[in-house]
Length: 64
Image (cartoon, one colour):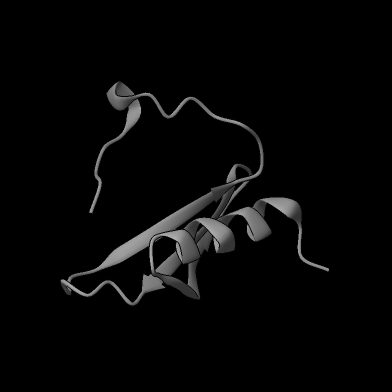
C-alpha cells in the first residue's frame, strides 16, 4: 500500500487535472514526480512531502 503522503499527492494532482508520472528524485523530505496532463503545455512537477511543511508564498520558488 502506498504511503499517505503519496496518496495525497495523487489526489492533489487529480484536483488540478494532472497525473503523476515517473519519479524525478527523492530524499529524506519526500519524493518529486513529473506531473502530466497540463493543457497549456510546459513541464510540471509535484513534490510529495513526508511531513507537513510551511508552504507560505515566501517559501514557494516556482508555481507552474
